[in-house]
Amino acid sequence: MKAIVCSEPGRLELIDMPAPGALGPGQIRLKISHIGICGTDYHIFEGKHPFLEYPRVMGHEISAHVAETAPGSMLRAGDLVIVNPYLSCGTCIACRKGKPNCCTRIKVLGVHTDGAFCEEIVIPEANAYPAGNLTPEQAATVEFLAIGAHAVRRSGSGEGAHALVIGAGPIGLGTALFARIAGYAVTIMDVSAERLGVARDRFAFESSLLAGDEAFSGGMVLTGNEGFDTVFDATGNARSMNAALPFVAHGGMLVFVSVVKDDIAFADPEFHKREMSIIGSRNALKADFLHVAASIASGAIDTSKLITHRTSLAASITDLPRWAHEKHGLIKAVISV
Image 1 (spheres, rainbow, N blue to C red):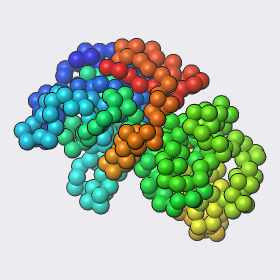
Image 2 (tube, rainbow, N blue to C red):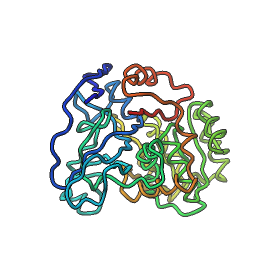
Image 3 (tube, rainbow, N blue to C red):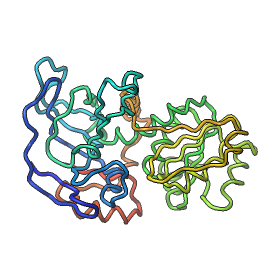
Image 4 (cartoon, rainbow, N blue to C red):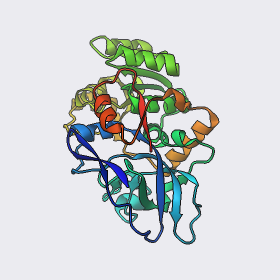
C-alpha cells in the first residue's frame, strides 16, 4: 500500500509498504478516507515533538471505512467510523481510573506508532466510533475538536464563566467553540491580529485581546478588574504558558491544553494568593468524541469554516512542508486518500 513516511526531520517520502497483516482478537481493518493534518504532524516534520522516534508514518485525525471485522463485531464492512487514535493498555492506574487518554503505556497513532498517512490500518474495534450522518471529511475533524472539548470539560467552570483562550490556532479555536457551547463568555487572545480577525469573522468571537504589553490591562477591563475564571493556553509556547497565570481570577483555573518540551515556571506567591488550580489536559475521551460528533451533526459546529486547505496523499509531500511555514489563511488542512 502507499504511505507517507517522515524518515527524519524535514524529510517526507511516498513509499510502498506492506499492508497490515491478519486481524487479531477484537481488531478491525480500516480503509482510510480522510486525515486531518495536525500541529503535531507539523512538529514531527520539523523535529519538535518530545515523544517521537523516526521514521514515522504520521496521521491521527482519521475517518475511515470498515474493510474487515473479526467475528462478533458490532460494525459492518463499509461503515464510516471516527477513529480514536489513543491506544491504551487498559490495566494501568490511569486506565483503571477511566482515563485511558493518559495511559502510562499509551501509544498514539502517528506519534508512538505508525498512523494513517496511508491506505489501510488495523486498530482495536473499541477505538472506532460510528460516524452516523457525518460526511467522511467532517468525521476527520472530530479528533482535533475533541482536544478542546476535553479541555473545556476538564475545566468544570459553570455557565456564564469568563474564559480566556490563548492561541487562535485550530486547537484554540476548537477550545473556544466548545467553551461557548458550554455557556462560557469567551475571549480569545493571540499574537496575530489576522487570526483574531478570522476568529471574529468566521466564528463570531467578538471579544479578543492582541497579545502584548496592553493585553493584561485589556483583560482586566473585560472582567471588571477580576480576571478570568478559566484560562486555556492552547499555544504550545512556553513563554505564553509562563505568562498566562496573571490573567486568572482568584479561585480560578489555568488549563494547559498544549504540550511543550520546555519547563514551565511561575511565581509561587501569585499562584498561592489566588488559590488557583493548574491542570493539564491531554488528548480526549470517548465522551468527548461523541460530544463533538453530535455537535457537528446538530449544526452547532460548522466544519466548513474550519477546513481551509485540502490535498491528496501524494501531494502532501510538498503541501505539508509548505503549510508548516505558510500559515496565511490556514486553519485545518485535510488529506483525501
